Length: 316
Image (cartoon, rainbow, N blue to C red; front, side, top):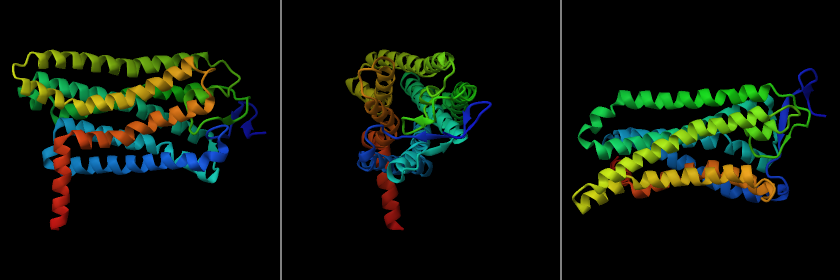
C-alpha cells in the first residue's frame, strides 16, 4: 500500500514508471534523449553566452532569442535529469510536493516558450513594418516589461493546476505511467471528479497557446503585406530572410505540441500508450535541441559572432 494520509487520501509520493511496457529497453531508449539533452544544454548556454558578450548582438531580436534559450534550457532541465535517473538507476519515486513543483515548471515553461515566440513575432513585425522606429519602440525597458508580463501570465495561469491537483482524493494507487509529472496523468489517479481539471487544462491552452498563435498569425499577415509592397526584389528577400529562423522555431515548437495534444484528445484508444509517452517527451525536448542549431545556421550575425568569439579566444 502506498504511503498516504488516510484522512485526505493524499499520497506521500508517486512512482514514475517511465515508458510502460518497454522497461527492459529503458537504458537504450535513454541514449538519444541524453544526446539531445547535451546538445540542448551546450547549444542554449552557448547562445546565451554569445548574446551577452557580443556587443553587435545587443539588439531586441537577440534579447528575445536569449530569453527563448533560457526558457528552453530551463524547460528540458525540469524533466530530463529525472527521466534519466528513472531509465538508468530505477529511481522512480518522487515526493508529492516535488511532483507538483516539476508539474508547475514544465507547464509554465512550455507556456513561456509559446509566449516568447509570440514576442519574437511582434519584434519581426516592428522591425519590418516600422524599421525607422524599431530601436525607439523596442527599448530595453519595453523588452523587460513585455518579458515580465509574459512570465506573469504563464505563472498565473499555471498556478491553479497545483490547487486543482491538491484538492483531489487519490485512491487509485500512486503509479504514474509517465516519465514526468503531467497534470492530467496525475489527475487520472484520483477517484474524485476531474472534469474541472480537464476543462481548465483546455481553457489554459486556449488562453496561452491560442492567444499566442493568433498574435503570431496577425503579425505575419502584416509582415507579408508590408514585404509584398516593397518595390525591390532584393529588399523583399532580405526582409523574408530575417524571419526564416523564427518561422522554423515556430514549426519545431507547435507541430510536435499539437500532435501531442490531438493524439491525447482523439487517439487515446488507437495509439499505444508508450507512443504517447514518446511524443510527450519529444515535444518538450525537440525545440531546446533544434532551436540553437536553427538560429546558428540561419542567422548570419550569430555565425559571425561565433567566429569573432573563437578568434578572440585564439588570440588570448
